[in-house]
Amino acid sequence: MSQNRHLLAFSWLSASYFAHIGFFNPYLPLWLKGLGFGLIAISVLTSVQSATRLFAPYVWGSLSDRSGERVRLLRYGASAALLLSLGLWFQSIGPVLLFVVLLLMFSHTSGMMPMSEAALAHLVSREGSFDPRRYGRVRLWGSLGFLVTVLAAGLWFERFGLRDFPLWATGTLAAVALSTWLLPDLREPPHPGGEPRPRIAPVLRQPAVRWFFAAMFFHVLAHIFIYIFFSLYLDALGYSKAAIGLFWAVSVVIEIGWFFTQGRWLPLLSLPAWLVLAAALMALRMGLTAGLPLVWPLLLLAQTLHAITFAAHHTVCIALITQYFPGRLRGRGQALYSVLGYGLPGVTGGLVGGVISAAFGLASVFWLSACCALAACLCAIRMRTLPPPRPARETIRA
Image 1 (tube, rainbow, N blue to C red):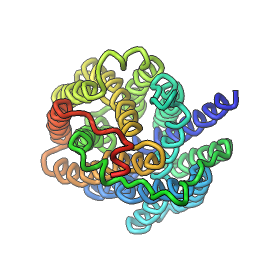
Image 2: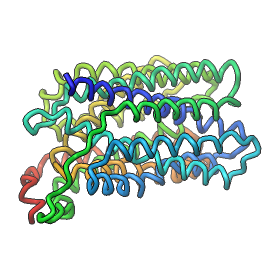
Image 3: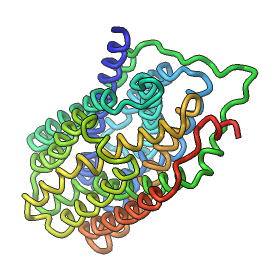
């Protein structure tokens, strides 16, 4: 019973955190546009979140591996981000000050999900193996939180404008901070004093692990263009803010359905095979988005592919990270997933996408996204041809 209560607490954290993301990420570019910023400035400011993922997750993950205090660190990060969000309320905030506020705020929130996933992976494992069914039942609450705010914020901003964006930021971060105090006071036992700390380098030297991270990088890079430019793209095509929220919501509804039933589907293919399928469907999704955006049924169809291109891909990555980086490597493994899978692609996608969209139009970004998905597919195919990594015990003692 106590474990079920623990999983419920992590469900609330997932719901509140992704409720914050569900309004913040889709509508931040539109808020910045309303403040008078151009495409290049918007690209730089929206890339700040990804830039913090280049360093913050690994710092927090390493600290949580050393101390075992993942929950206390989650509480600190959420509370600090809440206070920093008050800086968004200043109406005359300039680009430099806004950059600093976003940098500090994201430096505290960027490490939250890796630490949460590391703690959750331990709870949802059965006999040492990752259980996708139990993980999906927790993670779907994050999708529900995203769904609620992406729809509600779209309707609110359509009626009242984007002036209340800072209020939404503070309100959703308050919910995140509250949810961290509902978490159980779990502390993992410290690493035995006489035993050397497990090293991560031997794991990273294995070819299958390197190709996995390469496939993940290109796949998430393809997705980053959606997170930064999709709302701007639809707005430029004449879609209303409510319609933009609806397109986002469709992808999340299908994502929830996947997380709820993924225990039934994932065993049908090997984990590397799912990476290949997700990348191939991502290329198709971006081709439809770039080539036929005004044919709304096809654009809707492209959004339904999110079940595989994001939800299945995310679960497979978490499962592989759990296999490759067990025990006291888990926090650093999840941090690497955030750094290499979201930080570096986010910065690259934001800056490169801003330059390309300013020069060739927003549709060009999604053609580039399709190319990145094809590169991810090739990397995943290469990964499938390699022998699986050696057992973790051998690698951490090497």
